[in-house]
Image 1 (cartoon, rainbow, N blue to C red):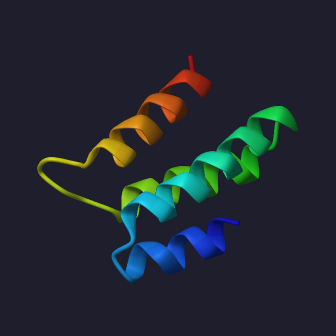
Image 2 (tube, rainbow, N blue to C red; image 1 turned 120 degrees about the horizontal axis):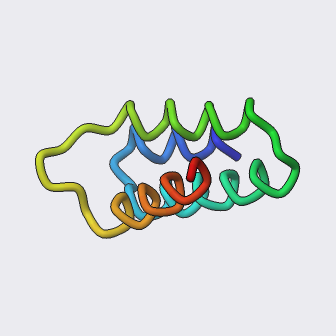
Length: 68
């Protein structure tokens, strides 16, 4: 799923990419998979912007909630 999200990110489909990454993140948290969570973090680090869109901010909130 994260491979599909990365492909969508490279084509500029941010909403779809971070929606898929969010689902993968939920799966990683459910199964306590550090590998999935780390890959989701790497996907997030690959996107940089001075003002991230709402989909990215929501993904950041989910990601932050997992590490608290």
